[in-house]
Structures are given as structure tokens and as C-alpha cells.
Length: 230
Image 1 (tube, one colour):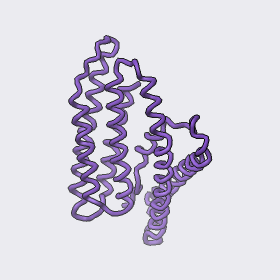
Image 2 (image 1 turned 180 degrees about the vertical axis):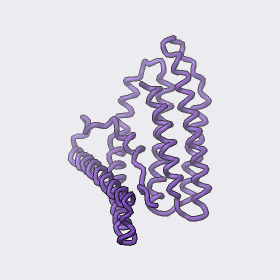
Image 3 (image 1 turned 90 degrees about the vertical axis):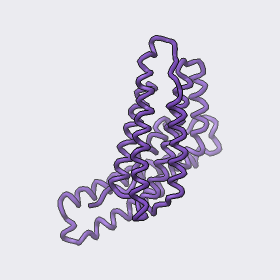
Image 4 (image 1 turned 135 degrees about the horizontal axis):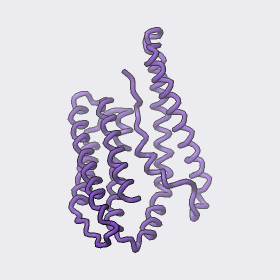
């Protein structure tokens, strides 16, 4: 059984609010635009190849060539994934700190600022986890690196969960449950993360089922976060 060797949700989330090169980056504009184009092109190419792979498997064409095409497609996807992630990371490294700072200014007088900023920090930490897992999924499992990411994210979740939602404005009262949902979903993510580490130790590879569980858990946290901040 073949499955997509990367998960792109986390990178998409990180870049979702960056629609183009903002002012103040004129010196790097061409470089950033090139990375944007590479990111978009590779994403589309990966999705197309993955659809080709799914069609190949569904139609059982592997019985005709003993899986040769599948292996070739997977190699192409893995190679393009590396370029995809590199382009995304280049964009985030240059632009994201500025966009985050701008958001904090916008939130300056927002009653929920403390909880929005801390929850966004949780999302950023989770993105970092997924970046590491995606790369290792396409390569080999590095327990020390993954465990370090687990410990870091566990602390972020614990710190966010300790916060008491004490916003006094009545119109935000319902947000308390949504804030708690973010933390609960993040805790569920940690459960899946421990399972992945345990299952990956013996083989030195991250199993398909575990990366898919992590992707699903990530989406759950993201959905809860989006509900909370909107």
C-alpha cells in the first residue's frame, strides 16, 4: 500500500495569511517571489503526482509492472517535497516574524489578546513538530530530534492549558469553551505523537498510519484554533 509521503497541512497553515511580499521587504522581493512561485508549483505538482499514484493503485496497475511506476512516483514526490518545504521555510524565515509582530499590534487592545497570542504560539510550535515529522517521514527516523520536539510541544501545551480564561466581556464568554477545546485537541495530538515515537523506534521509519494520524490530529487542533480566533 502506497500513501502520500508528506503532509502539507502545517506548511499551508503557516503560509495561509501571507498572500504576497509585504512592504519593507523590497530588497528581498525577487527572492521571496521566486520562493512563493516554487512553493505553489511544487505543491500543485505533488498533488497531481499523488492523484496519479492513487489512480494507479485503485486500478491495480501495479500488477502489470510490479509497482515500478509507484516507486518512480514516490521518488519524484519525495524529491519535490524537499524543494517544497525548503521554499516554504525560506518564506517563513523572512516574512513570518514581521507578520506576527503586525498581528500583535492589531490585537493590542483586544480582550482576548493573551489567549490568542499564546494559542498562536501553540500552533507555531505544532507547525515546527510537523515540519520535522514530514522530513523524517520522507527519510529516516531520528528519535532524539523527535523526542526534543515532543518535549518542547508538551511544555507549550501545558503552559497554554494552565491559563485561566478570565475575559470579563460577556460577548466573549462562549470563547472559554473554544479555548479549552484548542488545548484538549493539542493534548490529543500529543497522545498520537507518543504513539508515533513508540512505533517508529523499532523500524527506524515513521509508519504511514502514524503520519496520517498526526495529520488528522493536526487538522483537529487547527479547526479548533480557527473557531477560537475568528
